[in-house]
Length: 305
Image (cartoon, rainbow, N blue to C red; front, side, top):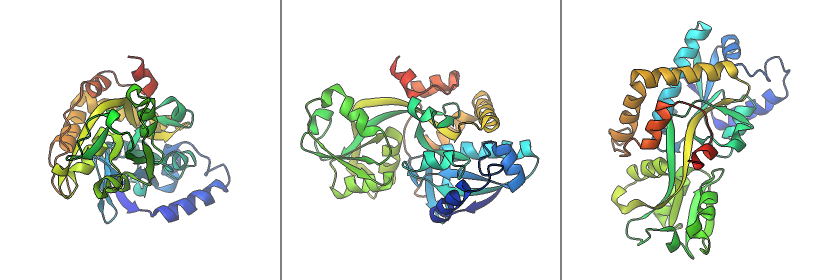
C-alpha cells in the first residue's frame, strides 16, 4: 500500500468541494467502487487515542485499530484487484462522524464508541475493543472517587460522552464540579498535567496511554468507579455495505486465527513506540466476550446486562 498524509485543512476543503460535486462520485457510498476508480482510500486516524490510534510524528501513525485497518485495506486491495494509495487524515472527536458521512474519510480507525445515536449516522465494524470509562488524577491529589470531585475542575474531550456518564452516575448526584472541554485527548491530559484540571474523565485505555507517555508516568493514576462500559469500533459510511462486510470478515478472520489477540498483546502489553513504554491493560473479560461473539451491537445493549 502506498501511503500519503493529507493535512486536515486540505481535506476539509476537499470535503467541502466534494459536497458540491455531482452525485455520481461525491455521493458514492461504495468504497470498493470508489477506490477502484480513484486509486486511493482515506483512513481517519487519531493523534492521541491511547494505544488504539496515535501519531508518531512526521505524518506517521500507529496503534491497535490503525493496524487492524491496515489489514482491512490489504483485503480491500485484493477485492479491487490493485494497489491503493492510503491517505491519512487526523480527525477529532468533533469532526470524525461528519467526515465519514460526507465521504472525506472512508474508514475511521480511532476510538469511537458505538451507540444508538451514532448508528443513525454511520455504520460500525464488529467490536474489537470494549472500554471502561474512568478518570485519571495526579497521584498525590488524594482523589479516589467521584464523591471527591465537589468544587473541582473536570476535563474531558469535546465531542465525547464521558462527562455525560459522570453526570448520570448516582454518586455524582449532589456533586458540583466544573466541566472543562479540550479540543483533543492530548490537550485534556495537558490540562491535568498542568494543574488546570483535577481529573480527566475518559476511556481507560486513552488515560493509560497518555499516562504511559507522560514525562513522569508515576505522577498519575487511574481511579474511581467505572462510569460506563462501551464497545469501541471502527467506523465506515452507513450505506457502505460492501466495505462493512469486508471489514467485518477481516476482523472475524483475525479473531479466528488468534491474530487479534496477538495484536492486542502487541499494543497494550508490550513496549510500544515512540518511547517504548507499556500501556499495561490486560485483556478484559468484556473484550474477550466480544471477540467470542463478534457483533456490532451498540453500547446500550451492554448497559442492559
